[in-house]
Image (tube, rainbow over the protein chains, first blue to last red):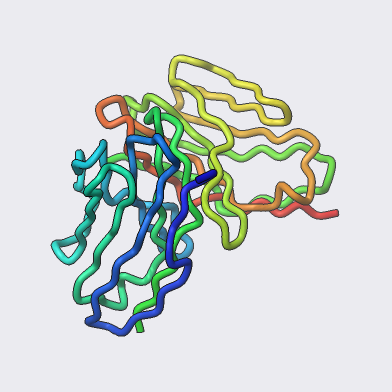
Length: 112
Length: 112
């Protein structure tokens, strides 16, 4: 596609539920990143994929968060037992060269 | 850890120049970036500068880097109402070039 696509654009879930957020990167981009942006803050790094493998997952806040990229293209960010503090905009980005990351429009997650 | 600081608000009149400032703490920063975020949208990469450069110009945008003072600025010439947005400064370090550390963003308001 022309840009990074994230679905859904909005997700409301109840506390304790499981959610999956999807990211379709720009075709041909080998690197994929997830960031989280809380209200009034800049994005914070969560995880980086190079191909199919997670090269750096140091930003994942705890073991309720997990991400996969099984075929080196689409990625899914999975959050178990959601908490109200998980409410944020989750941004995905992809790049061919690490210095030029292109971001999607994000998924706004609200945990009620 | 790394820290990136920005002033939170800037208001200018249409046609004037805007200057958005940023300071960072990581002396090993390799690339420094400016991203633009419009309401409800993802992050748009505006420009970036390699740390061995002092200045980069791209049409209406001028980036100045003072590496000694760890100070980065973005000047927008002839500011238009369409430039109203949040501008994020970000840096990446040589060891993990892919991982961006963002400031909290500067809300630029352009008044007609």
